Length: 90
Image (cartoon, rainbow, N blue to C red):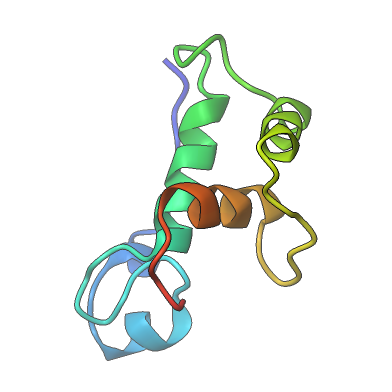
């Protein structure tokens, strides 16, 4: 099994998490971008469809018409978030 690493402080709750983490709100709920990032990392795992590369994910996102070009965030995570987990403003 391929390990996935996350920084605990990015996924917690509290005022500073809500202000500085794109992954979680101050209440401790995951944002759509956080869920997109988690999904992105899970898609890399060998046990999930043999593991998908960035080019595989970009091709799939392009095929369903999800525009790219995100600045300041991981583009694939942002595209997955907008497609699969809409609703968070963060």
